[in-house]
Image (cartoon, rainbow, N blue to C red; front, side, top):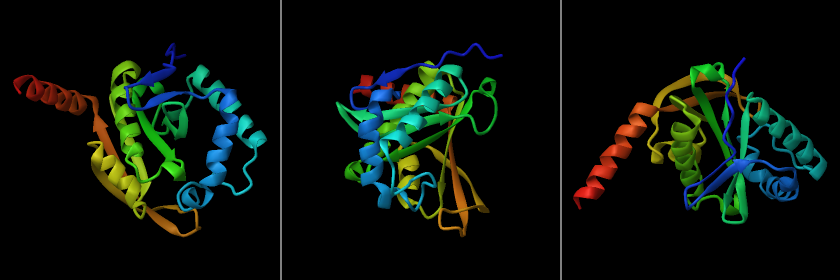
Length: 200
């Protein structure tokens, strides 16, 4: 049995990421409801009739999973404003493999402002730091150009496109891009940036 204790929160000065709390249900419900049309093409869980009760049930499960170390769904904030959700998901193997998939959605009112990229960069910093991941991946429908750009801007490498590997939200077959970044690559990039800054 794993003795891993998941970190609770991270603040890089631009983006704050933390474990959900039950009191987040109201703002999360509002964001999901307002963002339904924005989320619907890509997120199968999005629903037009999201209620606070639905959200509270989800948050209870998310909090329990976090504390048990079985899955890690996290809230994303810009100051005091809720902007979306992310997470480290154990979809590729047990936690001992030190590999996780990052998922994310950004509320429609905050989309197109670069906050998704900032949040992903924060997840990579936190993930390869305090969490101790060795490999982090990001998947998206090949038609989801904004999601693909987010991964690329954050420095992740597209490793593959899996053809006709799943059904999209619309029921049609989709292709899936897979991006990844290794801890060794992240650290090499960080050290290179630090060295360049010190030489200025």
